[in-house]
Amino acid sequence: MLVRNEIAALILRVTLGVLFLIHGIVKFQGGIENIVGWFDSIGLPGFMAYGVASLEIIGGIAIIIGLATRFFAVLFSLLMIGATLKVKLSVGLLGNGQMSGYELDLAFLAIAFFLAINGSKLLSVSSMIFKKDSKELTKAA
Image (cartoon, rainbow, N blue to C red; front, side):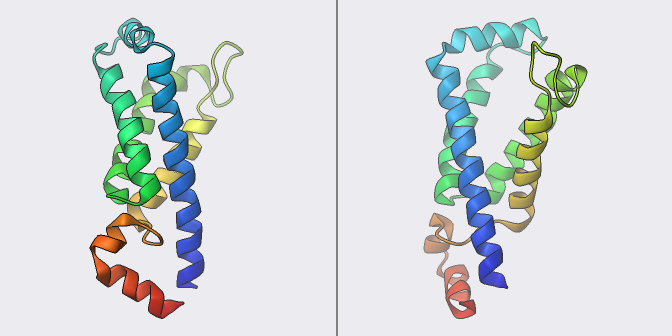
């Protein structure tokens, strides 16, 4: 049972990491200045766009490789709560035709929240650094 749970957590971890990584890269490729302007237009300090995009890239990579998974999952949870409340809540669950709704944000939040609570040790850098966890997984297999 433990091994199946870890396989599922690995799938969720890599999926969430890749999706956040892509979102962060796109913010820079599309012109981070546009995101800065958009942040300003919705009442957030523009410089936060750099922090959000950097978190998505750095956190995405960290979660993919399993480094500080719980820490970055908590940050991603907070990010999704903020994005939902500040931007997406007003357009509804499925959106309004001009902007997508918060259904994807809720899915990201649920995955991040799961990883924040449970972590993901299988094939993770953290398990390689802290050998105790990886030995327990090997015994369970």
